[in-house]
Image (cartoon, rainbow, N blue to C red; front, side, top):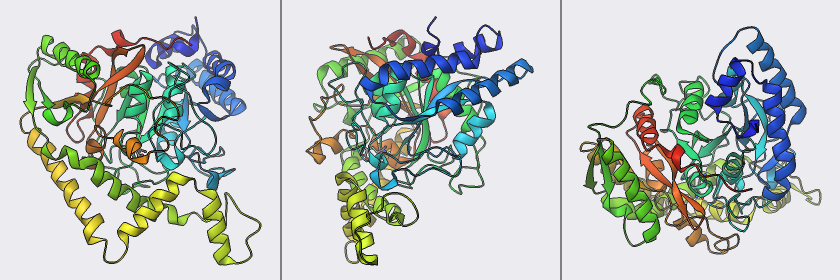
Amino acid sequence: MELNKLTISAAAKLLHEKKITSVELTTACLDRIKSLDAKIQACLCVCEAEALAQAAAADKRIAAGETGDLLGIPYLVKDNITVAGIQATAASKILKNYIAPYNATAVERLNAAGAVVLGKTNMDEFGHGASTENSAYQITKNPWDLERVPGGSSGGNGAAVAADMCLFGLSSDTGGSIRQPASFCGVVGLKPSYGRISRHGLMAMTSSTDVVGVISKTVEDAALVLQAIAGQDDFDATASSVAPDDYLKNLDNGVKGLKVGLPAEYFTDSIKSEVRDLIMAQAEILKAAGAEIMNVSLPHTKYSVPAYYIITPCEISSNLARLDGLRYGYFDETAKNLAEIYAKNRGGGFGPEAKRRIMLGTYALSAGYYDAYYKKANKVRQMIALDFAKVFGQVDIILAPTTPTAAFKIGEKVDDPIQMYLEDIFVSSASLAGLPAVVVPAGLINNLPIGVQLIGKKMGEAELLRVAKSLNPEQNFAKANI
Ligand code: GLN
């Protein structure tokens, strides 16, 4: 048995039956990374010794009779989430060699549950992108086709889960960064509601939409991880005080009587007909299982990408203002005075896309333009949120495509930022509205995976995951032949 191919729930069962150990499971993942990652380039660092020590500690806890679904389960962490003592570069040169001094709250909770950190994964620098080509370090390949991107910004995480280098990935989504790679790599991606999981230890990109989430092999596994990390946190005032639900309890209760909305604006000519057919087939599955399918409208959908690409650069320009290379990270020794230190460290440390966003955002926030851009974009954001509020008066769940096409070729869009931004067309709305969304595999087109997206009510993750499970995506779980 190739242990690295197990799901969390299957591995947990074997661990507790003492049929396998966490050291064996962790070693299988490390071996897989060693044999495959030169090709895929998903990992930015692997911490073998620490991982094996954590695994040995988990085995002791199991031997002492402790139970827990994540005890001894190895996972990879996106490089914009801090793990104490390990690098956190967010795939940027400006944070080269930066070692995080503390754990993100999500990592802290996974540690307490006994999960094992294998290392950090590649991403678009600071999360800016939809292909992982904006990494300062390497280009991650899609395990389904090495000439194609894995999506972004969590491309390393998506590729690693799809290629069975780990049992799950801890990730982040600001405007699609979990969902689009999940769709491109044929895995499950859960973006929880804004505030459902603490952002403490997640490097701020767009503080008003940033969320921590999960990339996994099954819906049940996503629920298990969410259960372990959701909830209030003294370190993040925006983490909701609403108590998390039990995400496992009703997972298999089906969709009888549930109302599912298909938003007209997500099924236009902008998606390929093969993608539309796969997504509509998912609606049929829910119908056959007893759900009622209804046509709905989210009229402001077309403003979502424009509003997102005003709000996001504005918040990025503020959040990245703190990085100057003075205390840590990239430092250009040729700088002669303070002004030059700033110019050279920031000029040499940030990549082209981060610079583009810093400049756009600084411009849009400057006196005289704030009202015309940032304030107006936030008004549009409210309209988008209101569209959802109205629709959720009629239906329980929204079913939609994730991406207009399957994974595109490396290099295809990297020189055209507008084309890259349009990748977010179906994923940015839920981020702007703070709603939970999950992507599960819907099938293959020309041997490339496509995921279907479900969007739920605020804090409605339990219902969302139950509907996702009813799609029975495990049946669509074709594996990349690698
Ligand atoms: N494509 C989005 C962007 O470039 C993804 C952002 C994210 O979710 N980190 O902004």
